Image 1 (cartoon, rainbow, N blue to C red):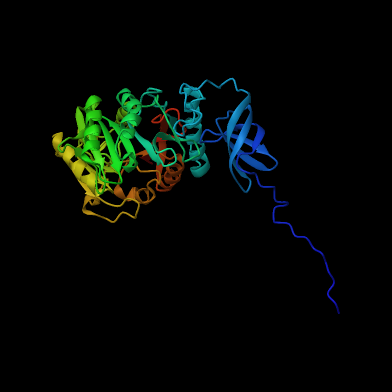
Image 2: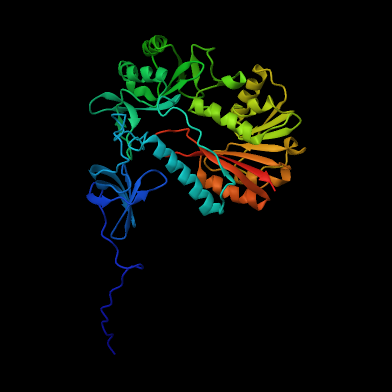
Amino acid sequence: MAKKELNLRFQPSGGVRAASLPTGKKQRLTIERLANDGRGIAFVEGRTWFVAGALPDEQVEARVLSARSQVVEARAERILSASPLRRSEPCAHAKTCGGCTLQHLPHSEQLALKQQTLAEQLLRVAGLVPEEWAAPLVGPEFGYRRRARIAVRWDPKVRQLQVGFRAAASQDIVAIGDCLVLVQPLQSILRALPQVLRSLSKPQAVGHVELFNGTASAVLVRHTAVLVDEDLARLQAFCAEHNAQLWLQGVGDPQPMPAGQSLGFALDTWNLQLAYRPGDFVQVNAPINEAMIAQALDWLAPQADERVLDLFCGLGNFALPLAQRVREVVAVEGVAAMVERAKLNASSNGLANLQFYQADLAEPVAKGAWGAEGFAAVLLDPPRDGAWHAVQQMAASGAQRVLYVSCNPATLARDAAELVRQGYRLKRAGILDMFPQTAHVEAMALFEAS
């Protein structure tokens, strides 16, 4: 018997697949609300649009940057009907540079967005509301950033070195004469930097440049080929003109030129100076860093007879001020070189009641000699991945108080749920405005044993 042709047509699960959206396509949208990263959200024909540069209740014409499944990433090209909240961006490069994404939103509204992000994460992930919300820690809206990475790329077509910051949603480089978020000494260096780099005999040997400001300003030039003496002399003269140190990095660690120079930053409230080298982690916002340490000490309330644990201690940013208040600080960090510099920082500041240890805190923490006695309190300041393995052992440490500084509300909320499971309660929480003009959220949370 011959098979009967059924002529069946199958559709993908979920209904008819929507036609693809090509990059560059323009679409008129009505923005309904903001996402946690500050992009506007719109809904069209079953797709969710995330639109950079758009605010709630605005009508915009957006250009597609990428589209996958039912999610579209786009950027507002024209504002057809503006929100009353919208302000003119103070920086002329705000619409193209990828650094500051919220300049079109007043600072007070930026803070409200960050507060909302933290509250939503704690409630959604952990089912938590703190017993007390702290007021945001706020510093200067501009002129706060003491460290910046400058993108550099040789363009063989025009035989010129491109110098600037990465463009939004692109690897293109935006030439920038002034960056309003940089501290003043770095702004003058940035303005003159492209000219000196392009004057080098082999500008294509420059990989990228980093700028630093602390106890001194510094320019780190990462190079992919040996710099000739003539180019070294140009760079040294440039740094001397701008009262900055020159650091070079080819193969191996960054080195000062000439040798013997050192960098550092001050914690004036505690009469401390911490040395660091390019590549070490330091908080980019000095005023907020000091306010953050002061708030951490206030919330944690360390006592003179206590032993306190500082996890992810870095160069001793929290550990050294803590050591001025307690019997002993045990500080643990994953990067061996930073542990050694932290030890030197303690010694150079005359602090002998700190013990520093190197351990991979992204892995389950083995019971080491440093944890044997237990702790009255714990302070931790982990990277974006959070401190999952560390918090799993918190109750076993005997800590009655846990102060958690976070750069990622999602992992803070995850870890908070674990701390509550172990018998802690979320006593207090608040945001730290470490990166104004961006949607990046830093937060602090205090947990107390029930």
